[in-house]
Image 1: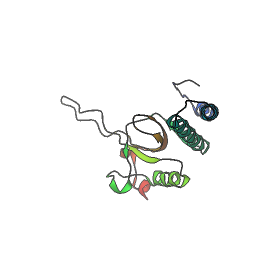
Image 2 (image 1 turned 135 degrees about the horizontal axis):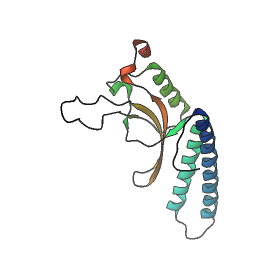
Image 3 (image 1 turned 90 degrees about the vertical axis):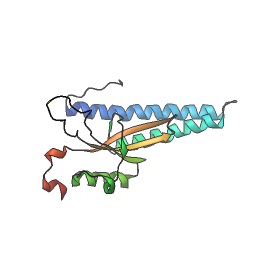
Image 4 (image 1 turned 30 degrees about the vertical axis):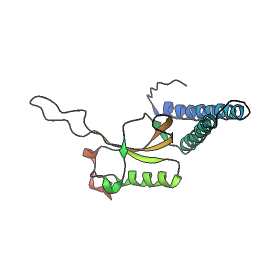
Length: 168
């Protein structure tokens, strides 16, 4: 599977999603083989074994998320998401999907891509409005310096297009 992705229609998305599952299962099998080799080889440190175990656990969770139908997306800069701490209205359909994701127990964190404008416009034109926010489920393993992280889309909306019925 390529590292770059272009999706022009829903059929390509379905085929790509299936390919992601296959690729992650192959990666998992490779890591499990490596773990067996590490366990039976002299000179391998407990830290090296622990890292491979963490990668196996990480890939297992990613596969579960993919099989549950969650869609991986690029990793964005995010902030913690809490309904109580956000000032933006969130559509009920997205809140329900976030609650489902929490019940699924696959994600390490639920995070928010805030959708801020890139910068202030200069000149006589007004500043651009907020960009569309995303709520993502994050699967993490390891530390900031050494680790793995995968983001999955849980919800996306355009605040300026919301209707009162979206909030009920």
